[in-house]
Image 1 (cartoon, rainbow, N blue to C red):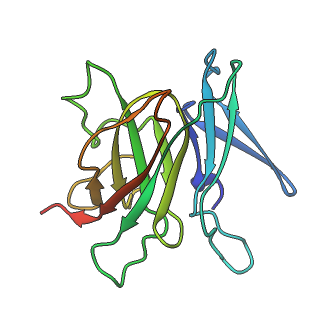
Image 2 (spheres, rainbow, N blue to C red):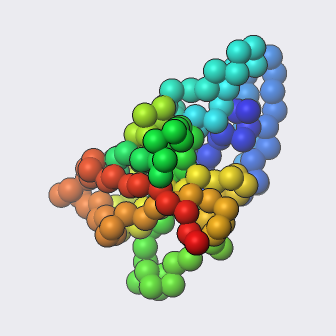
Length: 182
Protein backbone atom coordinates (compact mmCIF):
# COMPACT_ATOMS: atom_id res chain seq x y z
CA UNK A 1 0.00 0.00 0.00
CA UNK A 2 2.97 2.33 0.46
CA UNK A 3 3.69 2.49 -3.27
CA UNK A 4 0.18 3.79 -3.97
CA UNK A 5 0.43 6.30 -1.11
CA UNK A 6 3.72 8.01 -2.08
CA UNK A 7 3.36 11.41 -3.75
CA UNK A 8 6.19 13.69 -4.83
CA UNK A 9 5.49 17.36 -5.47
CA UNK A 10 6.30 18.78 -7.92
CA UNK A 11 5.93 15.57 -9.90
CA UNK A 12 8.99 13.65 -11.03
CA UNK A 13 7.09 11.44 -13.45
CA UNK A 14 6.73 7.70 -12.99
CA UNK A 15 8.23 6.41 -9.74
CA UNK A 16 10.13 3.13 -9.48
CA UNK A 17 10.15 1.31 -6.15
CA UNK A 18 12.88 -1.06 -4.97
CA UNK A 19 12.23 -2.85 -1.68
CA UNK A 20 15.02 -4.37 0.39
CA UNK A 21 13.61 -5.75 3.62
CA UNK A 22 12.24 -2.76 5.51
CA UNK A 23 13.93 -0.18 3.28
CA UNK A 24 12.43 1.45 0.21
CA UNK A 25 14.40 3.14 -2.55
CA UNK A 26 12.46 5.38 -4.92
CA UNK A 27 13.75 6.07 -8.43
CA UNK A 28 12.56 9.02 -10.50
CA UNK A 29 11.95 8.97 -14.25
CA UNK A 30 12.75 12.68 -14.54
CA UNK A 31 15.81 14.68 -13.46
CA UNK A 32 15.63 16.91 -10.40
CA UNK A 33 15.21 20.61 -11.23
CA UNK A 34 17.66 23.22 -9.95
CA UNK A 35 16.72 25.35 -6.93
CA UNK A 36 13.51 23.44 -6.31
CA UNK A 37 11.97 22.20 -3.08
CA UNK A 38 10.54 18.70 -3.42
CA UNK A 39 7.96 17.36 -1.01
CA UNK A 40 7.67 13.61 -0.49
CA UNK A 41 4.36 12.70 1.11
CA UNK A 42 3.40 9.27 2.38
CA UNK A 43 -0.37 9.48 2.45
CA UNK A 44 -2.88 7.94 4.78
CA UNK A 45 -3.63 5.13 2.33
CA UNK A 46 -0.41 3.44 3.52
CA UNK A 47 -1.25 0.51 5.82
CA UNK A 48 0.74 -2.10 7.68
CA UNK A 49 0.79 -5.65 6.32
CA UNK A 50 -0.39 -7.52 9.41
CA UNK A 51 -3.37 -5.53 10.70
CA UNK A 52 -4.05 -3.17 7.78
CA UNK A 53 -3.90 -0.17 10.11
CA UNK A 54 -3.78 3.07 8.12
CA UNK A 55 -1.71 6.07 9.10
CA UNK A 56 -3.55 8.66 11.20
CA UNK A 57 -2.11 11.54 9.17
CA UNK A 58 0.12 11.98 6.14
CA UNK A 59 3.88 12.15 6.67
CA UNK A 60 5.88 14.79 4.79
CA UNK A 61 9.60 15.03 4.05
CA UNK A 62 11.05 17.98 2.14
CA UNK A 63 14.41 18.41 0.44
CA UNK A 64 15.80 21.06 -1.86
CA UNK A 65 18.18 21.14 -4.80
CA UNK A 66 18.91 24.78 -3.90
CA UNK A 67 20.07 26.67 -0.84
CA UNK A 68 16.66 26.91 0.89
CA UNK A 69 13.58 24.81 1.53
CA UNK A 70 10.34 26.61 0.67
CA UNK A 71 8.19 27.31 3.71
CA UNK A 72 4.71 28.16 2.43
CA UNK A 73 1.95 26.34 4.31
CA UNK A 74 -1.77 25.83 3.63
CA UNK A 75 -3.82 23.79 6.08
CA UNK A 76 -7.45 23.10 6.80
CA UNK A 77 -10.09 20.47 7.21
CA UNK A 78 -12.32 18.44 4.92
CA UNK A 79 -15.86 17.46 5.86
CA UNK A 80 -17.65 14.55 4.18
CA UNK A 81 -21.03 15.09 2.60
CA UNK A 82 -22.55 12.45 4.87
CA UNK A 83 -21.69 12.12 8.56
CA UNK A 84 -21.30 8.36 8.11
CA UNK A 85 -18.40 8.81 5.64
CA UNK A 86 -14.89 9.14 6.97
CA UNK A 87 -12.80 12.01 5.63
CA UNK A 88 -9.66 9.83 5.96
CA UNK A 89 -7.66 9.60 2.75
CA UNK A 90 -9.33 12.40 0.80
CA UNK A 91 -6.82 13.90 -1.61
CA UNK A 92 -6.06 17.62 -1.44
CA UNK A 93 -4.77 19.11 -4.70
CA UNK A 94 -2.96 22.44 -4.90
CA UNK A 95 -2.48 24.04 -8.31
CA UNK A 96 0.01 26.88 -8.54
CA UNK A 97 -1.65 29.47 -10.73
CA UNK A 98 0.16 31.37 -13.43
CA UNK A 99 -1.31 34.12 -15.57
CA UNK A 100 -1.81 31.65 -18.41
CA UNK A 101 -3.79 29.00 -16.52
CA UNK A 102 -5.89 30.74 -13.87
CA UNK A 103 -9.02 30.90 -16.06
CA UNK A 104 -8.52 27.61 -17.87
CA UNK A 105 -7.43 25.29 -15.05
CA UNK A 106 -9.30 22.03 -15.39
CA UNK A 107 -8.71 19.42 -12.63
CA UNK A 108 -10.25 16.70 -14.82
CA UNK A 109 -7.17 16.79 -17.08
CA UNK A 110 -4.47 18.71 -15.14
CA UNK A 111 -2.58 16.99 -12.35
CA UNK A 112 -1.85 19.12 -9.28
CA UNK A 113 1.48 20.72 -8.44
CA UNK A 114 1.22 19.64 -4.79
CA UNK A 115 -0.69 16.75 -3.20
CA UNK A 116 -1.47 15.54 0.30
CA UNK A 117 -4.10 13.38 1.98
CA UNK A 118 -6.38 14.08 4.90
CA UNK A 119 -5.88 12.44 8.24
CA UNK A 120 -8.40 10.56 10.34
CA UNK A 121 -10.30 13.70 11.36
CA UNK A 122 -10.20 15.33 7.91
CA UNK A 123 -7.30 17.69 8.64
CA UNK A 124 -4.69 18.34 5.97
CA UNK A 125 -1.46 20.30 5.60
CA UNK A 126 0.24 21.29 2.36
CA UNK A 127 3.77 22.08 3.49
CA UNK A 128 6.89 23.53 1.88
CA UNK A 129 5.02 25.37 -0.88
CA UNK A 130 6.83 27.86 -3.08
CA UNK A 131 5.53 31.44 -3.08
CA UNK A 132 2.63 32.00 -5.43
CA UNK A 133 -1.14 31.82 -5.76
CA UNK A 134 -2.84 28.44 -5.34
CA UNK A 135 -6.22 26.96 -6.18
CA UNK A 136 -7.18 24.19 -3.74
CA UNK A 137 -9.45 21.21 -4.43
CA UNK A 138 -10.40 18.27 -2.23
CA UNK A 139 -11.15 15.07 -4.15
CA UNK A 140 -12.14 11.61 -2.93
CA UNK A 141 -10.03 10.17 -5.76
CA UNK A 142 -11.74 6.81 -6.43
CA UNK A 143 -9.46 5.93 -9.38
CA UNK A 144 -6.25 7.14 -7.61
CA UNK A 145 -5.26 9.00 -10.79
CA UNK A 146 -4.70 12.47 -9.23
CA UNK A 147 -7.52 13.86 -11.36
CA UNK A 148 -11.09 14.86 -10.59
CA UNK A 149 -13.48 12.42 -12.25
CA UNK A 150 -16.96 14.04 -12.39
CA UNK A 151 -19.91 11.90 -11.28
CA UNK A 152 -17.45 9.46 -9.65
CA UNK A 153 -15.41 11.51 -7.16
CA UNK A 154 -16.74 13.61 -4.31
CA UNK A 155 -15.06 17.02 -4.48
CA UNK A 156 -14.87 20.52 -3.08
CA UNK A 157 -13.08 23.71 -4.05
CA UNK A 158 -11.81 26.48 -1.81
CA UNK A 159 -14.03 29.56 -2.13
CA UNK A 160 -11.09 31.68 -3.34
CA UNK A 161 -7.51 31.31 -4.47
CA UNK A 162 -4.84 31.46 -1.76
CA UNK A 163 -1.68 33.56 -1.98
CA UNK A 164 1.49 32.37 -0.24
CA UNK A 165 3.96 35.25 0.00
CA UNK A 166 7.14 36.07 1.95
CA UNK A 167 5.00 38.31 4.18
CA UNK A 168 2.21 35.72 4.58
CA UNK A 169 3.55 32.16 4.49
CA UNK A 170 0.75 30.51 6.48
CA UNK A 171 -2.93 29.94 5.73
CA UNK A 172 -4.57 27.56 8.19
CA UNK A 173 -8.31 28.15 7.86
CA UNK A 174 -9.26 26.34 4.66
CA UNK A 175 -12.45 24.37 5.30
CA UNK A 176 -14.05 22.32 2.55
CA UNK A 177 -17.21 20.20 2.43
CA UNK A 178 -17.32 17.41 -0.12
CA UNK A 179 -20.20 17.08 -2.56
CA UNK A 180 -21.00 15.03 -5.65
CA UNK A 181 -21.55 16.61 -9.04
CA UNK A 182 -24.89 15.69 -10.58
